[in-house]
Structure formats: C-alpha cells, structure tokens
Image (cartoon, rainbow, N blue to C red; front, side):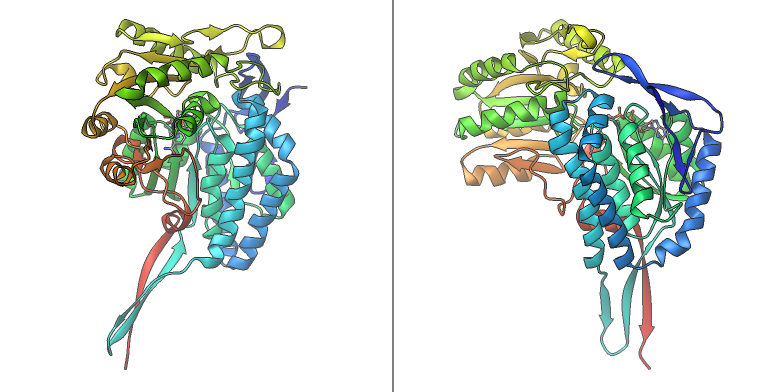
Length: 482
Ligand code: NAD
C-alpha cells in the first residue's frame, strides 16, 4: 500500500497545511511507492514555534537526561535495523547490504557518540593572576535548523541532529525530499524513546519552499547544512544578513594519489571502494585517480577488470554491488557527463552506459561503473562534481606534479594517498588542499575527528567537539577578586 508520510511537529504526526504531497519514487523500479508532505512556510512556522516552546525545559533538563534519551534513540534504531535498512535502500536505490552495514549502524553510532560526548564536554577558564577569573559558558542557541542531502540520508541527518540535541538545542530538521523515509521512521523512534515533544521536529518538503523558509526564519539561530555547493552559496547569501551561524558541508572532486611504491593489492581493493561505493554518491569518494607512471598500465588493467565484474542489479539481491542511482534526473545528469567526457576526448575503458534490467527493475535508473582516461585536469569532466559511478584515471611522474593535480579544482573535501614512503606520506598530506587526507586507507572514520572541507567544499567542521562547539554559543564570564 502506498504510504503518506507525515511531518513530526510538537510530538504530533501532522499532514502539511497545504494538503499537497510529493511523489516519492523508488529509483530501482522508477515507481512511486510513497508520498511526502509538500510543506511550506506555515508548516515551518509551526515547527519552529514547537521547538521554541520545548527549549526552556530541554536546555535545563541536564546532560544525564539528554544522554539517556539519545542513547534510547540509538537502541531503538538498532532494534529496527532491518526496517531502517530496507527503507534506506528503497528510497535511494543503494544495496540493502550497504544500508544494513554502513548507513544505519552509523546513524545509530551518531546518536550513541553524541549522547556520551555531552557528558565529557567542558569549557575553558582563564585566570588573571590575583585579579580575576574568566570562565566560558557554552550555551545552546535555542532553535537550530538541520538540512541534509539524499546520498547518506539517515547517516548525515543524525550526524547533525544528535550533537544539536545533545548540546541542549531544539531542532527543526529538513531531510532531503528525495530520500525522506528513514527520517520519518526516526520521528516514530523519537516518540517511542520518550524524547519530549517539540525537541525534534521533522518537516518534509522541497528545498526552495520548506528549506528556504527554515533558513529565513528569524527564530532559527544556526543552520547546519550538507548538500551541493551552489545550494550552500544561496543559503549563505540568505543567512548572512541575519547573522546566523552556519556550517556548510558542500561538494567535492576528490583526488586519489597512487604512488608506485604502494601496497598494490590493498590500494586496489580500497580504490574500488572509494570509486564505486554507493555508486560514487558519497561526498568522500575519489573521482580523479592519479597513478604514478611505472604502475599505470598494471593499475589500469586490474582496475578495469575488477570494475567490469561489479554486479549492477536489484538493490535487494545479495550479489548486487551497484544498485540504482538516486533519481531519474541524477541518472540523466551522470550520463550527460559521460557524453561530455567523450566530447572532451576521453576514452571510456569500462561502463559508460545505462544498464537495462528486467522484471520489477525494468524502469530503474542503473548505470555501469565507468572509467575514463585521456582527459586533461582542466576539462569540465575533471573539474565539476559528477557524484556518480564515474572516475577518470591519469598518470603522473613526480610528487610535485601529483600535488599540483590534486589541488587543481575549486574543491577541497577529501583526498587519498597511497605510498609506503613514510616521509612522502606526511609531506604530501601537508600540501594537499583538503579537509581530510587518508593515507593508505579510505573512509576510515573516527567520530572524534574534525570533518569538513576547504575552498568550495564548505565552511566549518563537524564531528566530535567541533560539532558541540558549533551548536553552542560561548559566553565569557569575568569575576573580579575582592
Ligand atoms: P542539494 O544542495 O540539492 O540539497 C541538499 C538539501 O538542501 C536538501 O534537503 C534540499 O531540499 C535542501 N535545499 C535545497 N535548496 C534549498 C534552499 N534554497 N534552502 C534551504 N534548503 C535547500 O544537495 P543534494 O543533491 O541533496 O546532495 C548532493 C550534494 O551534497 C553533493 O554536492 C555532495 O557532494 C554534497 N554532500 C556533501 C557532503 C559533505 O560532507 N561535504 C556530504 C554529503 C553530500
């Protein structure tokens, strides 16, 4: 039966004021399987009012209470792992094996991590010898907005909500309209976990209407946003004159630098993952792969052979490596970039086309994992974010050249370096313009570390204490000695 999702406002499950709904298709079938509220400014107004109302009690509830509630939410996500994993897969087209092993466990960890982190959060004091002492209070803002994208839906939504709530804020969250289902399931879990009404409100709808209204609302003091660079730019323009605190996690075009002295087998296994995990629709995926010339041919042969063996299929089937890409428009965008790459002189070594499945997946949006070579770093294919199962490969000779190539785009989110030379590893890491450098690994995440990008990949850092600092306002109190 087709389901109509509800907004979660003030602890109630409400239809949108307008009564209008948006279709929510399953990208693996192309068929609409649920409907989501097409919320407008009036729904956001209600959610902000509910959050404002809940704030005094929540912010004074004490860290132990907040720890217990957030921990219960983590427990319930774990108890409902299968339902969450299936919903994530149906919404996004990713293999259910991936949402079961990565997305949902990580969303659970996000709540667990920040539930406990708040118990350890402390602030500074500054002593003025013999005169006075200053101490810093870290106080929650009140109402904050959390806006998330479709690629890691619950994983990234919870990455914002959990620290915001732990720090004592009340939240209005706007999940991506393309993947709303797990956020809806989360609202049910929050109710069951005993999260007080109004502390978290989840409003579904489109970016330019519901999202924009949230950013514009005068009672929303801080916005944590993850999404595209252009949306981030627009958001910054809207929020800056209102002096809102902003965290912007934006697009990327991440380089992999593979030196000839690396552990070839480990590098190859991880490069497969960093190229094609979740169809390349992870902001951390490497999309420009640079290989030192002595191993270029060996790399190319093995990489192409392994890529051609990846199984593109129904996300619910166990052998599937590559599910559907997230939507029809994204499918068309990715294929248009493959066409552009060919126009720019690129040679397609693997994939480069849509995959037509049969049966219930006949109308789904499947693309063969694609490798392209022969393109200069200045071309659009190597400069613009494709965010699909498409990587380019290119040889380099020297370390200096590799660094120039790595830094040759407007982005600076993540990067990967493969080498057995310890000195080189550190030297290169220092010179790469990126918020994250992985050496001899990829997407190995410690939730305490700062997470975010430089250049057009964003402003601010998430993760660990950085997130708790973002979601609190420091206040200095100076006490003079008599
Ligand atoms: P998007 O920018 O289109 O949308 C992101 C969110 O913003 C959605 O919830 C959308 O509804 C909302 N939105 C759109 N317009 C808005 C507006 N005017 N006001 C307020 N909200 C608005 O991004 P997407 O296509 O959902 O996600 C893919 C992008 O996200 C890629 O560029 C990817 O690199 C990026 N991303 C970055 C990170 C990171 O940590 N840096 C992580 C994941 C994804």
